[in-house]
Image (cartoon, rainbow, N blue to C red):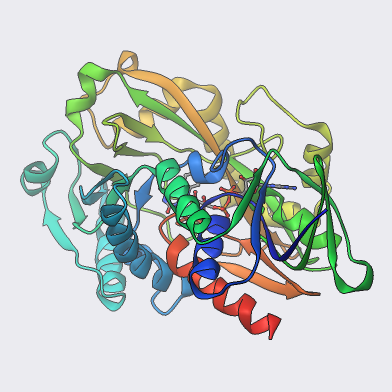
Length: 401
Ligand SMILES: Cc1cc2nc3c(=O)[nH]c(=O)nc-3n(C[C@H](O)[C@H](O)[C@H](O)COP(=O)(O)OP(=O)(O)OC[C@H]3O[C@@H](n4cnc5c(N)ncnc54)[C@H](O)[C@@H]3O)c2cc1C
């Protein structure tokens, strides 16, 4: 039986970042346990790969702080470690008067968060950046970037490994038993023991936390985000990233165009209730996970407002009807036609919902018995992963004193 000081469950960007930061500043015996045979198989490898500087998040929130700092730190990290990263900037486009007004609020927030932005007034100014985008006005943020998220996670893991961290891939933690104050992590491949546990299990973080009596007023509600991609001959229509103006009441950004580091242009994601935490296709479902979501009081309370029901139905329509998805995309880029879109991959967001139906918008972690549980590594969790992992490493070492 292997014995560690700290076992980290989950080999996504958050788990690998905590491992990297802990290993850099201690000589403790640390391991990362991942149920899949590859790291970054779920959220950390199935996202838009965009570094979101905190221009769009409430000033003084943890989210804004981590996103702004995370963008800068990740750019330096990726350059130092040859992780593909393109500093393309992002354009947030307003297509009507109401959205036009919202751009000013976004710019105010950006300034408070220390993020540079520029308002582009009218189609001509927009076309200087994105010759095919449509809109009345836009906000341009030059700090946004596109990154290869899987290579980034593998680079972090490599650094952690070089500092002595052991990685167990293909080990699913099935049960946690804690006789005499030591955690016995019973996995699909044997038992690993550790004095301290860090739970960064993403879509299953609540399940592990609940086993230890932590975070019981929260549950993860999985929201699938599906992508299309432009056929290669149409990729030239998009130079960087084109986003719609976000609705401040909604946790998701809306269908957008992103030029990835491999030069593909992806469009999405939408946001539909997933019929299972890893049900990536809209025909897949996991009955017990579906029932657990549908039986959760917080889920029903979330959908009591007519706005959330309307948004939910619109997103569902985009999932099952390609034309509805394309209509949303065409409002930003009218030159594209239905034949220019190919179905691409999907990701599932681990959205934590309180049992009173509120969505938790900031990163959230709680401590339990000799353990720390990341309950909400909410988007932009990839962007935030270096400062968040750093902050968590401090919190863990503090708890261990
Ligand atoms: C569609 C989509 C688009 C996004 N776009 C962006 C973006 O452009 N920019 C951005 O900054 N953020 C984005 N995000 C958010 C970002 O991807 C996540 O916040 C981040 O990846 C969360 O990382 P994580 O390590 O917490 O979770 P994960 O990457 O999901 O890692 C958790 C790991 O735990 C493992 N695990 C679970 N249970 C167990 C168990 N019992 N035993 C062992 N291992 C287990 C899983 O297999 C998984 O590998 C997006 C997310 C999605 C879904």
